[in-house]
Length: 269
Length: 217
Image (cartoon, rainbow over all chains, first blue to last red; front, side, top):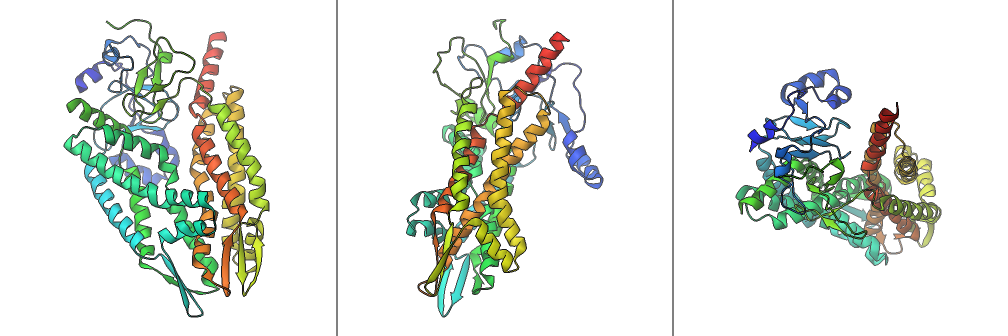
């Protein structure tokens, strides 16, 4: 009900460019950005909390969700009025400048494409060796799995668990969850599982460390390069692409949009 | 009809999904609130985030000492081996002429954890004293600490890759040592500390002080 949302906005709604763009981007890039990615401040500090439109979401419930009218900044907690955007626009916090929410065209299609690509690359990466080492007629191969259990043989069991979580479990969980969330939103399935999964991957995001492992692989390659004959395995390349795809898959979905669309699925179901 | 007594303090924000809820009228000291949308636990007020963060930081600071003094791995070549700490490992790299790599190891394993500890202590002290200076910059510092922390794991991963690859019996063999475990613990503890630190407190105190100044001045 966008009409009701607009009605509760104060008349003097400001629409100015995103300050972050001004400061971070060079001039040539700023010009390119100002065309497609125009950003606005999302709102005005709420002075009148007795506005009936706000209370529509509050009534009756012990804990009522009012996200349709208000948006809290993720970083500093300041409340803003929600205002619908057009494709390509970004709403930012008035106090700290963080992104509140954005409207992205074809978000679901991009998520689907990226998660399917990611899952394929994940399977390839785990099926083939990353590196091989040859010395004096003997050969050792390194796969992701071997790297994880390396500490197990040295009896550091907690480290093995940590590495398995960082390299195997979390990336797979992230990809599968994103796929399930995309399908849930598209087909409007009951969202209980998708909500739980999205919460988990939002909280556990920092523990997926594929890109850090890649840096480790590069360091090891340089370290061993002088001592022995190194073979770069096929998984090395799929792993590089997997990192790029996972980074893209993490940045494409807008959290606010995903949460509110999952919530809409619950109301629909 | 909505009741007239609602203010911004009555609105609770779920830190995970951003859903807004209304603070219940009666709240016992040990009540837990859960978000209706995502099911995550909702933080009420200050909570004990500062105390828990301090505890994690102190544990990390204690483990930082053995992480740097104990050997992280031992290289055995033709039967004879020598254990290496992080610093001596970096020193070997410098001696071998690979100083960019040595610099990377030095920064990721020694400078970053130390800076991370100091930055989190600085932020905590600022929150406890209700500092209102430069909240934007302190927020940036927090975001940076949160982002950079995971890159320290690179040292643990390098050890894992080396011990997995270099297993040629008596010819050449690499083993992990206790230092790696301590080092990984430092990284994990500081990551947890960055997670438990409630970054909204940076803004709460800043905002409160400005409001007080306006009221008095």
